[in-house]
Image (tube, rainbow, N blue to C red; front, side, top):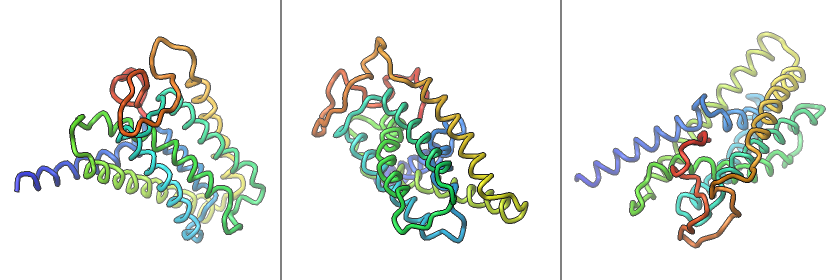
Length: 234
């Protein structure tokens, strides 16, 4: 009975943490990415948007699990830098789309969402790993945290669609102008992040190559965990 109660308590804690992690305004990386990713969609495009969000979910779920289990270990410096790159590329893709609509059945944006999700999953694992014990059974916690991320992600998408509806349908703003303005602002912020996060030679062990460790942690490779608390969280 105690074990069951403790598991339920942990599930709620990690579920709430997942929601707060992706919606935290102090770390807007993922909010900016999801905004840029969904910006050209309208409520009527909900089927295409569902595929897009699912592609991103599949991507970040894979690397979140692999990184949390220490099967995939990647430099935190490079993860933060690459997340900024994904935001910039997604924003630029909006600017380069002249029609600012999604007409093709399998647009490039779906593939970008899947691939970029893999990178964001490494960022999501940072907080989760800092909360887990070394010998802890993390299946429940991993599931709860990931579900929390999805709920938070859907909340962001809902807000984007709502604001888009207000500006375009109610305030009668030109959709192209809205997308260009918002995407341009996101691209500028992403470029600034990239410059600030360029991985340079430091007296740290975080700037190493990716290693597939088969479940074992290799000293000298950063696992995006709490050992570098001075760095901003993703």
